[in-house]
Amino acid sequence: MRAIEIYRSAEFNNLIVVDQQQPTPAAHQVLIKVVAAGVNRPDLMQRKGLYPPPPAASTVLGLEVAGTIVALGNEVSEYNIGDPVCALLTGGGYAEYCLASACCCLPLPKGLSFIQAAALPETFFTVWSNIFDRAKLQVGESLLVHGGTSGIGTTAIQLGRAFGGRVIVTAGNEEKCRHCQKLGADLAINYRQQDFVEAVMHHTGGKGVNVVLDIIGGDYLPRNLKCLAMDGRLQQIAIQNGGKSEINLASVLMKRLTIAGTTLRPRNDEFKAKIAQQLFAKVWPLLESGQLKPIIDSVFPLDQASQAHERMESSQHIGKIILEV
Image (cartoon, rainbow, N blue to C red):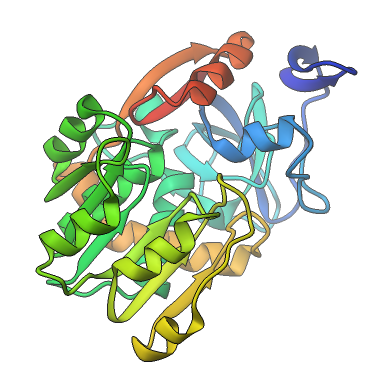
């Protein structure tokens, strides 16, 4: 089968097409013939040697796919050969075939294409578990999302609004801000032209927001804390601006703030299966009705994975970048 490997040299970390042996599913796994795979920022980090895969995970990039099941492990009973699914992976998605734990698969939502479905698992699992399971966003509460036009951002806007939240986002230009508002953001802040702390506090009448979902880190941390209301919750899910910052702990104490950090990829199947069950029960009906939709920026053939990464690194994309196999 064709798969994408990282070719490392002194100057470049290139993505090349290689021929690999087709994998065989373990007892709890399914083998998927991949139609489309999502591109995510952790893929870029792994290509650069900054995000090694968990033990026993495939070294092939790719954390989410959509395709058809072509083989079953002997303990799998919830799916059949021929079933169309999308799946959350620990790796292996940039290939013609990949393995997935059956419990981390979900049926293809009715009315969605394989390309659309490949945009779902990584962002929907991440956003749901952080905003609703951990931060426990309630109806009527406010949510600040950084990177509003990223895959995470476009998903968070839609899920936040669908479940009764008021959503504020930051984005890097006016076009991106308009896209966020079309998706349902109550306020979109161009962080290159406005101080997002001032804009958030003005919009909320000085109260601040209840939840912040942040992919930036670094110097955003103290500014996020200033944005939070009493009993506010910060969910840190990435650190694009670095992992170090300095904060005034007095504000954490006085406002009774909660700071939490998570990464999804290393979590076990039991944890991910619970998220999958919640998504199937609460989110899949909204996808099938058209109330929610994956936002696709661009689609590249598998052998143009490097160009897909370049597109993400440019930060010009709006929504998900997909590889078509």
